[in-house]
Image 1 (spheres, rainbow, N blue to C red):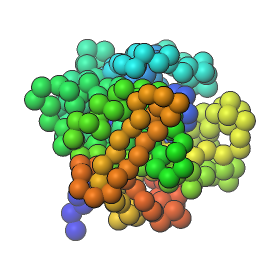
Image 2 (tube, helix red, strand yellow):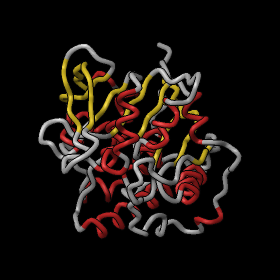
Image 3 (cartoon, rainbow, N blue to C red):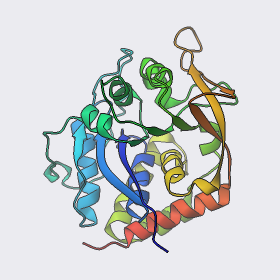
Length: 288
């Protein structure tokens, strides 16, 4: 049987939380996913692009087009920049990419987008005349407890623009992603799996130290996995809105029924965790 592939463009704030790196590794280990381009968003987008280039160099694969997106938020909120981005990656400045591509233009030309960072680039793309976006899969929001999730908080105005655009969007909220942990056993297996595994392991340990925890939540890999294994997820159709002001600014709400949006309401958590780990380990076996 011929395998069906899904082509998409990734928009990422890789470098802060290690889950963006985990997502790219998972993509590399997913033959049914066709990564057409990677765009970086939020803060030092050049450094983030160098991290993307370093990942592909480590496994000896040519990188897809890498494009720089928006540095600043449209809401005016200050970029959250802990300062540890990329510090565990040796010779990071030696990793180069073609710098002549515009991130928003790349996204506007894509039919499917996986958004795993603040939605600043995506907002600009859906507002581009003649854009070709038909579907957005995103990690963001929280739909049960009223928690303001990080990607939404970082640029509430951008999130509002994306949801109001009417582009079909599947959101994987914090209440779902928090169900899965990658802890010491998973870190050890990844870190022992070749150069890419060592890179990921170092970044996992660095983030654990920063966050004062001993596990990772694979928020972004879960969202991307919906493209490869939609059968593992239960979704509900409706409309997502975001509160744009007041003390609850950034709070997302979902109204079931007719609407352009959907959210993940359940998943086979054990299978999702196994798929993520297995695909990351598969990618780590790639040799230059």
